[in-house]
Image (cartoon, rainbow, N blue to C red; front, side, top):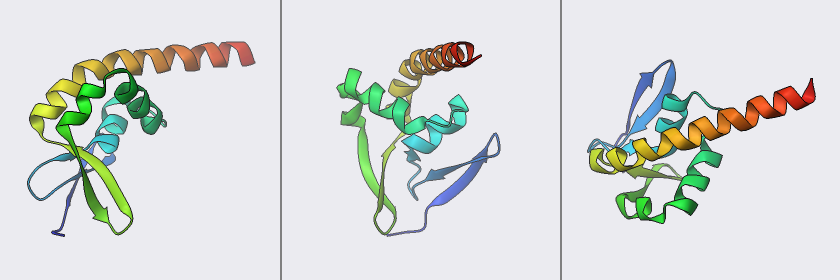
Length: 100
């Protein structure tokens, strides 16, 4: 396993493979500014299983295999992501309103 690279995007670490593929969960967290990137990813791949054809697992650390995509895969995921981020914000604002 070669060394991966970490880039800070909006003060959040995003891991990249040596050949430039991005860690999906890291990227979702960075672009959506959410604490629930795994939930968004699980929902997105359940509703759009075709995104998995662009993914592969990469062992960033021992026992830490994370889905990664190249730029073409991210170009497919990114437009879908906006819906899930907006939906999560709506759910959380509804939760906060109900709690008040």
